[in-house]
Amino acid sequence: MDRPTSNTNLHRKHAILALLILSSLNLINQIDRRALVTIFPLLKLEWGLSDAQLGLAVSLFTVGRTLITLPAGWLADRKGVLKILQPMVFLWSLFTIASAWAGNFLTFLALRLGVGLMDGANGPLDLAYLGKVSPHKKRGIFLAIYSIALYIGSGLGIIYAGAVGENFGWRWVFIIPGILGLIATGALFLLPGKSRHEKKEPKESSEKNHLSELTFLMRKPLPGVFIGGSLGVFASTALVSWLPTYLTRQYDLTLTRAGLITGGMIILASIFGTLLGGFLSDHFSVTIKNFRYRIAFVGLLAAMVFGFIGLLSTEIEISIGFFFLASISFTLPVSPLLVLVQEAVSKDRLATTQAAFGLTTQILGAAPATGLVGILSDQIGLQQALLFPFLAVGIGGIIILLTSAGTSHPAIKL
Image (cartoon, rainbow, N blue to C red; front, side, top):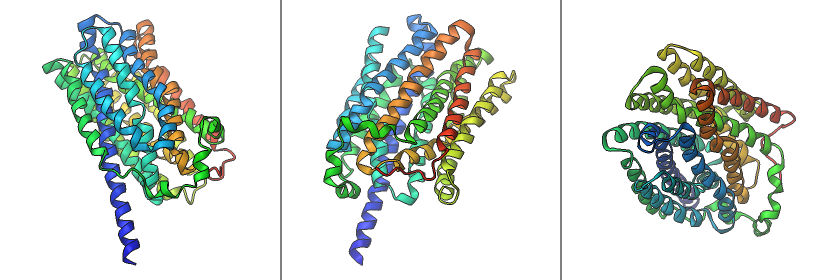
């Protein structure tokens, strides 16, 4: 009896170590992403950029992520997650540091494209690895904790970039995340290359996992979950990207104060919303039919309502309060949707499926969000432009609800 117990404890330690390392990597990635949008005013001042050009810098980064996400996931299912993730994190770190030495906007765009290309594997491959090593009954909490790192990184990135950018210049903003990325690369070598689940996968299952077999991604509930989740990402990305700028323009706040407010709001809201979503997902999905779909629907619909009120308010306290409620609502569906995706496929297809989910959220969500709002802002003003993403998130909630119709359980037998 000692040996099974010892093996169980070892697997648990590996799972916790993986959660710590991959969550830290997620945190670093998000600090870099949100740092960029926070220093928009500084880039605008240095190179005389329009809002559309500023949005292009973020969108081009996201295009890079989009191009590499699915190939990286496919390779990870065939070669192993860590064999793909380790070199990409190393190159991501180098491109991030190099961004600090860009001499003009075109060079900066090229380097951000490189950062995006190397960043594309991080989220999907992290989630695939955690899906294989995390305890089944605690998967929702594991994925929730990982996702919290995403939002905490977003908040810290805004606070960090606002303070460092104003006091030391925008170029210093990219150096520290790059150095931390190099440290994270070394930490990845502490993880075992094969989980116990990977060893048990049938050989014939892996042999079928090639590009011509990707039609399984079109089976219910994946398309509906992908699209509904993408519209949520579209709205949340637009809000996080433009809220510091919105606060500086609408209420004459300094960049540092706007960054502190936005960052603090994101951190607190994401911790509460994501953990609550993961807890409810693990505890009630067994007894309540389609509970994960329902909680996702409620969260996305509430985000639309709260977002509209926050934008239409003329008082800064009321506006921030409703943006805070919208941020909680954005994060409530995160863990339930991730678990739905992972339970829909076999373990040897996790990386490909997570990559496809990430690819969809990039194309329909993160990639166009910042740039599209920037284009609309140049035409109709930032306040009116931000109404569009909140309408989109409500539509995403409806799609999630419709996807649950006729779905009696979250898993698909392949």
